[in-house]
Length: 375
Image 1 (cartoon, rainbow, N blue to C red):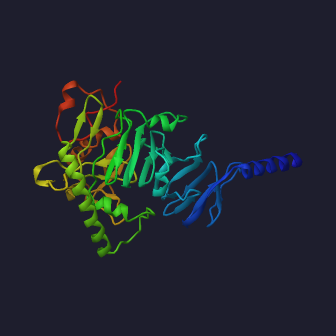
Image 2 (image 1 turned 45 degrees about the vertical axis):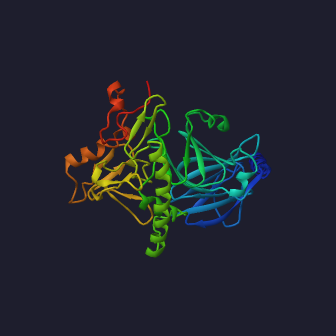
Image 3 (image 1 turned 135 degrees about the horizontal axis):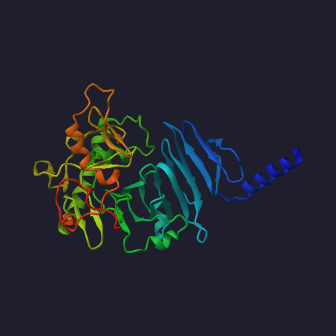
């Protein structure tokens, strides 16, 4: 039996050695483990170690790892996250399966000039993404099956899919694929037929996330640096808004019934832990015509230095239940306020009934709760 066990171990190790090297660890913080193909147990990640095809990477709380692929693509995995690094079988294009959490990806610009094909793919259980030369952040929450995408540079193709063994390149040529350009955000959830149309986030959140490539929850950004970058965001948003207004893509939410695409109210924030998008109140007093967004009011929450969403005092945001009162806080919010907040995110956390035909043209404030996947 001992000989058999030894032979089995040797075969596992030879299998791992046979897997091609596709990158290496270039930065690390905290507790990170990597499980290579052919090994039974994950090992603690160390600087400089090679990463082989189909390696599984797991980070714990307050941890982070950056892996640089052979083509210089940089993949950063945030805290409490898991991914599997792979390649597409035919053309050896990088492929990341994001199992949970968030990643930040920097795809080298020059690689995009070689041909028109995607240079990198990301997939979750609910979405597929195709990338050429860009910088973007993706979040996936397996509790509610929500996938989010924020593009900081370039363009990312996003499509909803539930197939796990699909041809990603073919999937991204479908007519329901959404192109998410720099400065915009899009999401996928179970209750929507397709990915949402791209919209701009709160400029404060967008800027803070852009300045936090390691996705650290404890980052401190100097005020001068933040203000400088915020001005760049404002200029970027201003240019984007010119095209939006020209094409009648206003900040108010809308539903394209023909193509079944929802455009959420622009200017909201995304909660990085739950994946839920909190839309701003769409009244004229909070509308910024220059940026074509509605500004988020403090009663709906604030934004931390790391760029994450902070609910109003006395509230917890749950991935499945939505906003719930924090009973341990003496300043727990009133029941009617909870109802109001949850109404605006209902479609992201609850399985809805089939919408009525007249609901498709409704312009009420709640951005998600009437536009759902067809039965």
